[in-house]
Image (cartoon, rainbow over all chains, first blue to last red; front, side, top):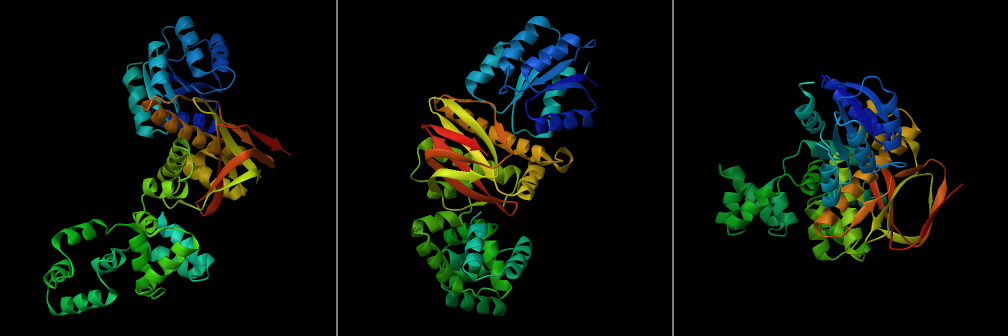
Length: 123
Length: 298
């Protein structure tokens, strides 16, 4: 079981991801609606998440900018992108900035569990 | 998809009532289409020839295809093609309507001709639509539009069919300068092209049905959730379009989707409206392409 943070501007998507990850035995300890809210939350969290699922297209601060900040300030926190924006350039930019994997929406719930599981099942 | 579109036409023209349609839809689920029905639909045999083969089938313990071949009505290749069409939704609809004695076998051809004439479709269009494949049907409706818009419409209907309602169908598109909405989910695309993609919903319960199908009943509790789900649907559709476009070196970038929960209008020189019916409710897909638009609320 891992501690996970879900970042997505869609409340519905946060609920879907939270439900899927919880059903798979993980604990979603925080969610946030954009990159800035996620960074603000990380600053105040005593126990950091093992992994963050991060959307790209979000208002205020997008996922790529948030990813760069997270990798710089919290290098132990793993990040998997979960985004509709699957353009080659976006995927490469995210992987280059330190994301471990990229899941494109719309996704199958089993794929989310499998991809997240690759990185946190030992947590 | 074409089964639902054609059924919609039959109801609108008074050829079917809602009770008859419900009976056909219920029966359709259980249907295994007889080869003779498909042979007539594909214009490979006449109704009379099929009846003759059926009578011979009653006399001899042989398959329809074998008799049709021995009588010279079909060849082996045609039988193989007809067998491959047995799960086609339009044909199962046709079979169910015939078996329920609601529409006669000989009437279908005339009804299809009327449908073709009234909608200015070509015979080739009808044959494409009978395939019931989204990728072959959508371009018939949006043939005048730029390539990227055609792709966008195709991705939208394919995604709705896959994630929300596999019986989705579209109605004829049109262009307006101002389109009213009661609620709107929208997203702007930038990069090589400037595109607005939006879904306008008229009824709360319709939006709720689509949202529940998309996100699951446990995740949707009110109107805001419904709109949020529609925004996420648009986001997924545009993401798939952007991904496809990037493979052709066309740069498409997406802004965050936005919801308008109050009545308003989308205005532009050419707002393309593609109505589609999902979960029994009509929605309007709105698109502007490389031109200014405004969304006015209130």
